[in-house]
Each structure stands twice: as structure tokens, then as C-alpha cells.
Length: 285
Ligand SMILES: [Zn+2]
Image 1 (cartoon, rainbow, N blue to C red):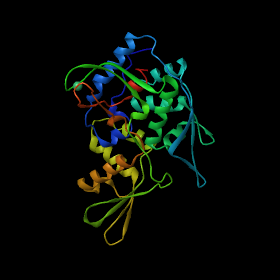
Image 2: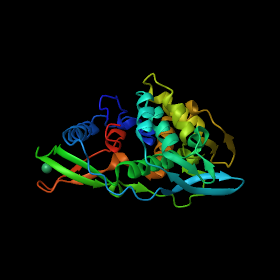
Image 3: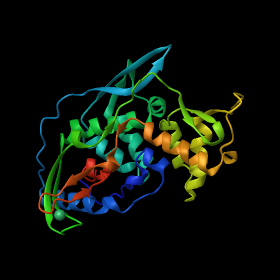
Image 4: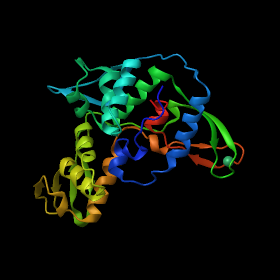
């Protein structure tokens, strides 16, 4: 196992990119604790890898029919090498994980095009299931410092404890977002291709990334008088409306909320945020 690979920050993990960079440093202590624990125990306990069948939140649509069944498989040394070869780009690592760890979606073998088509939330759910069949269901932390009382804690976190958002109606692909002045945006949820387009904007300009995702995901704006504008340029939307739409795109996205995991430290009774990232899920890969 290599531990010197530069892994993506949590804010590069899917919908967090869209939400913006709130707390990039939070995951550091957890990641370091986990990698340290891995170095200390050469043979981590791996429970039964279990089920390889996954039912996605959205899935893919073919000729009017939705296919939500997917198959994942356990990663091998060859996969580990391929992931390491993907370099430091979080999107490439995620894509490599999906291409190698997912056997099929519906009746189709996994391809890059399929991965692009999947909702960000389905992609992140598949990553969780690949983790489950590869390393088991429990994330083990040793010597995790509590930021409130500074005590070091050992912690076992089952993957099921990570908050998860379900779609009310998996087949609903368009959502209404109320805006100011009686206007409404009709939007679709971002998928893998949208995520790649946003991550390709690497000049550190978050507003440009926001513009990109809005240009791709806002289908129409309905004015108060009922008239509609198709594909409105996102730079012409007001800042307020942009923020409202982006928040909805993030909130409505189904799947695991890796960044929202927190636990209660028994000794001091305080809640401790513990954002889960790729390095934690895959033990540094
Ligand atoms: Zn504490």
C-alpha cells in the first residue's frame, strides 16, 4: 500500500465542488489519523465484503425505461496501480475508481460515457459500495484528536452512519427553483460530465465554476408573466438567484453526504465533525 500519493481534498468530492470551498482543512486530522493507524497495523481487519448489487437513486434511462441496478466488485492490486497512475486529480481518481470498480449499470457494462451520465450522487454512492466490497463496512480510526477536549479517541464508523439523501421520485429529472421577483428556474441535477467540466476550470475562480454548472444545469427561466427563457446565460442571472439555484442543486442531489458526518465524543459529550474523504474511504489507496 502506498501512502505518499497526493489525494484530493474533500472539497473536490462531487457536489462539494459545486457548493464551494467551506472547510478544506477539516478532514486533515481524520485523514492523518487514519493513515497513521494504517501504518501501525499492517493487517487491517476486513469484514465480509458482502453484497455486490447496488440499487442507484437515479440510474440511467434507455428508451423511456429507467435502469437502477448496478454491480460493483472488489478492487485488486491492478486497480490500485491504475488508481495511483491516475495522479493527483480527484476527478481522474474518482473516474478510475468507477471504471474499474463498477461492472455494470442496468444491462450495460461500465464505460466512461456511462460514468459521465450518472448523477454525482449515484457516482458517490457507487464509490461507497466499491469501498464496502474492497475494505468492508467499517471505517476504523485510531488516535483521533477531539477538538473540544483534545483526548485521543478510537472510533469505528459503519458506512451506513454517513448521512444519505434519497430522491423522493427517482424518475423526476426537472426541478423548479423559486427565484426573486416571481421568477422560477427549471433545473436538472449535475452528473459526472458536469462535474468534469467544472473541475476542468482550474484557475481558482469559484465564480467561473459556478457559471459553468449553471450554464449546464439551468434549462429554463420562467418569468412572472409566464414567458420562458431557454438556456439563460448564467452570467446574466443575479448573484442572489445564482446562489439560490446552486444551493438547490446541492441540496437535491441524492447520495451520501460524506462531508456531513459527525460523531458525539463520549468523554466530553461534544459533537465532532468528521468529514469523510477518498483517502479515508480507501485507506490512502
Ligand atoms: Zn471530546
